Each structure stands twice: as structure tokens, then as C-alpha cells.
Image (cartoon, rainbow, N blue to C red; front, side, top):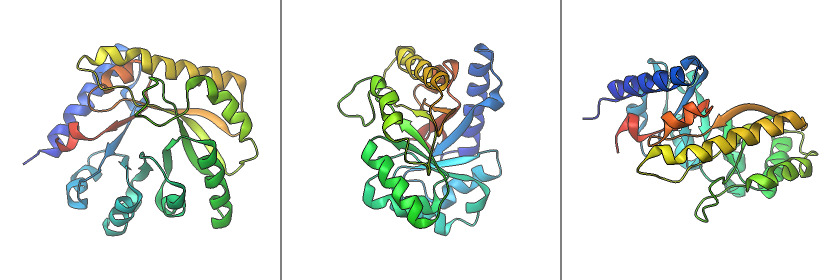
Length: 230
């Protein structure tokens, strides 16, 4: 049996150490527990133990868990997977934050659907493919300012920061340039002052590399197997 609570405490300890190494408060870093494939009863122990958000990759799985979980109102529900336009309506019914907005088409579709549903603001992060891997979704870093200019009319979409996925590396230190580039991009965007854009969140770092991500400024970590087991 996986001891979820012991794993969760170990993750918190490692985050605290990484934060202290970089002169940050551990409280400035929030964990999104990645619950893909984890049943509701497997998530439940975390709810009383300081977890603030869970992240789901698939809309249908997220909806089923949201309906079944008695604790659904006590945490934030984040969507972290690739979002198809035909799933936007269902996603917006439960998602407090969408990490994975990766195209202008998707931004415009979210804006239209939010209007139809009477939603004033939909908080999202722009997914940036910093590493340039063909297997990953996201904008290339240089096009992000142009994208924000292109979607200025999408006033129901609240851009709250950036997200990236680093390549898997045996040595997590090799992911540092990816995380650093995303942080520097966020700082540049904040300086330019785009409408509807706030550099509130840097969503980067997963089980294999979250300590390096914390050292480089991440304040949202997407951690699954370090908590729930492989």
C-alpha cells in the first residue's frame, strides 16, 4: 500500500528545503496534486492535510470525480491536460484554473463559451514549449507577446501566468535552463503590461524535477507519482 500522507509530507519537506536554498518562503509554493488514474478515495486523505488543489488531465475523469467527491468544494480543481475545443464547456463547469492553453484558436473558443455560459472571467495559463520538443504542446517563447496582442479582444479570458513541461532528464539539474527561460519570459511580459495578463503563476516542475523548478521561481508544482506512487 502507498502511504500517501507520508509521501505528501516528504514532498513538502523537499519543497521547503528547495525554497530555503533560493531565499523563498515555502508558503509561496503551491502543489497541484496530479490525480490522473487516482480514485476519489485515494485523494481523500490529502484533503485534511494541506493540499490546496488537484490537477486532472482528462475532462471526463475530472467531471466524474467532481461529482463523486464529497470534498469537492474544499479544494481547487485545475485542468492540466491538452484541452480539446469540444470539451471546453464541461471543463469550465468545474475548472478553477486551466494550465494548458496552447493555441489562439483555443483562447478564442474559451472566450466565446465563457460568454455563452455567463462567466465573467476564466483564469488560464499559457502553455509554453520552452524545450522545443515536437511531442509537446505549447507556444514557442518568442511568439507569446504576439499571441497576447492578438487576443486582446478576448476579455473573458484572464491570463494569470505561464506553464511549461521540461524534458525528462535523469539529472534534474539539466532542466534548469528550461525553467529559467520561462521565468525570464514571464518577467518580460509583466514589464510590457499586456491587458488581461498578470504574472501570478509559474506552473513548472513535476515529480522528477520540482526542486529545481522551485529554485528557479515556480509557485505551482504539478506532482503526481511522488505522492501517489508510480
